[in-house]
Image 1: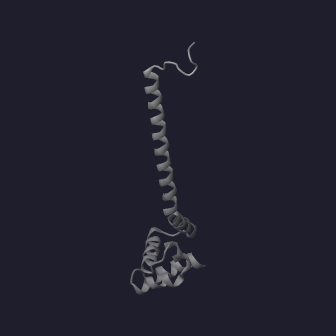
Image 2: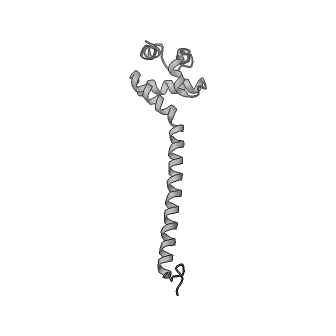
Image 3: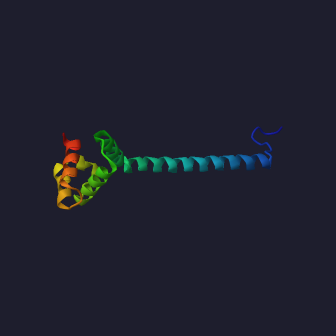
Length: 113
């Protein structure tokens, strides 16, 4: 009488099953790495997203945006979007001759009025 647990499995089937299992595991590993990097990228870009939203909300031009970024870098603000809450940092643009007084006044009125 033949045993219930002994049956001949063709080698082709075991090779194909092993290949499918290996490909599945590789796909899961790749998906995990991609998800991890995507999540890390979102954390890294969160302040940039806030910066972009604030720039758009205040209707800033490219030059005004560049001036604000420079002011934030000079003041070592981290994240740079804090410059939207620090009027004294913006006023220093005139001191460093990066902007004229009228440009800074226009920028201040867009940001803080």
